[in-house]
Image (cartoon, rainbow, N blue to C red):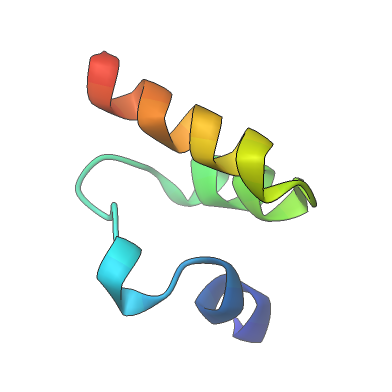
Length: 45
């Protein structure tokens, strides 16, 4: 849970767009640029 908070602060909540499975995969990405890319892709679909 701590890792989730550190990776996705309240300001960047995408709870309406992503499932917990999505978050689990995104948390494992260590490169913030890659994580941002995939988060931005959710806005395009």
